[in-house]
Length: 178
Image (cartoon, rainbow, N blue to C red):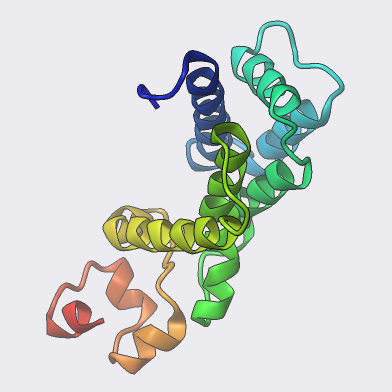
């Protein structure tokens, strides 16, 4: 973001802060994450941001300045909310929706800030899914500590692995083959 013009740099940083804050509400909440996220979503949808919330003040300015379609932040928040109810995915197609919401949507929002050419959205979607899959592979152990297994169940079975193998840190030839 450092190479962007100042106004776009600030907007991309506001997007990052919005994403990071939203994700942290679910991942780091020590009480009721569902309620905490619902409160946050209510603040996001409020006509104006709380005067003491720098993230939402910057985010609201970014949304207005760059005409970010409201369905995009809602998709992102829906993806983050999936972590509250889904910690397993049967197939890659099931996982794809999660990847789209939490990563591709960030690319689609970024396009409104940085600019884009016609037809770029499909590439932003593919790149987002690829980046999220990379995050999933990088974070297998960390996710397992939270009781989450994002690797599709059909793929685990194809390589002779189970949720318990992932949750218990099995790292053998079958895991590497997967």
